Length: 355
Ligand SMILES: Nc1nc2c(ncn2[C@@H]2O[C@H](COP(=O)(O)OP(=O)(O)OP(=O)(O)O)[C@@H](O)[C@H]2O)c(=O)[nH]1
Ligand SMILES: [Zn+2]
Image 1 (cartoon, rainbow, N blue to C red):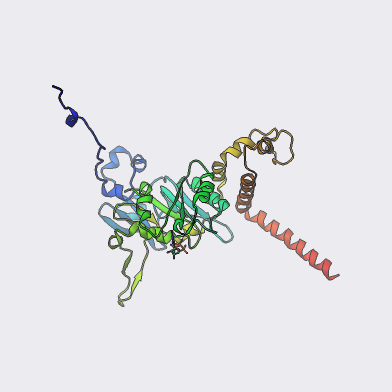
Image 2 (tube, protein in one colour):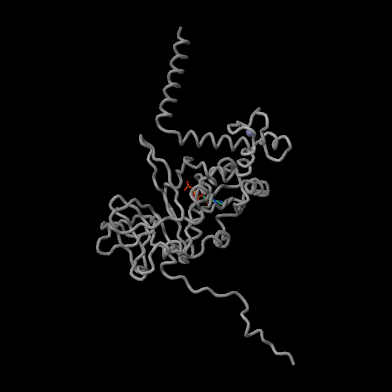
């Protein structure tokens, strides 16, 4: 007789313990490792969900409060709350950070969001689709240390999503690409791999591609729980206030801040190099350090182009993006000088015409 031991063996998936309240807010070992072991039990981690001039709204385990705008922080940041003196709370190191250059004279950097795990780069299977723009968004994500996922919406309005998928997948082998109908029941399941409890996600893309539709889809099962709509004043008027970071019923944090939509291509040299890492490697093999990859002898890039290893259009996009990045990142004085000389040139040309 053979005994059946199967019931004694661990079969099936190992069930994970339910996430703690802090884990649901996005707490990770990366953060707890920053706290000395002897302080761990007494510490009160809180996460910034709203940033106002007057203070930061923070959430923790059983905590929903406001702390003064102390050290420079942005939405998504983690603090160790100092109960006695909240202004003294300790800002923890970040896993990732989206930032942009402000308009104005000093073009100071503005932090947009911290500790985002995944950014969904959204475009549609129609005329919005533009490889160069996707490459720019992917570079931004890499620069911020956030995992990019490309979503191609309006698949239902498109006869053949194949070419869109092919072009998007050719951008980087490190980026997952999905085509879907954002208006259907699809998004919840299709985005599930990145929207698990404790994960923080954000959306990037032009107007009208379906970002709000996707966000709503993530919340559809839990609209009542989000607290997005609440009475805002005493006059009985209900206004919609938006937490910049809000949580689905499953405990996935969704970032919704206008700043994300205005991200520019500045200081993303490393991100661009990651998107075009094959071209960067080739460029490193050119005979001359300052090779412009045009007519120089011993140019590895031109050689690869001739032998069909790389694509001419992609090479052109890399050069354009890198040039644009250099221009955006160039100092204000350099820009002003450029503007002045341009101005002079225009004036001279106008004078010449009058004569
Ligand atoms: N058929 C179809 N319609 C879609 C899809 N995704 C979005 N739409 C529609 O496209 C329009 C724009 O969608 P939004 O979700 O508002 O786009 P958005 O990216 O949030 O736009 P902004 O708020 O301007 O940034 C809406 O009418 C949506 O219903 C899709 O996958 N299929
Ligand atoms: Zn070269």
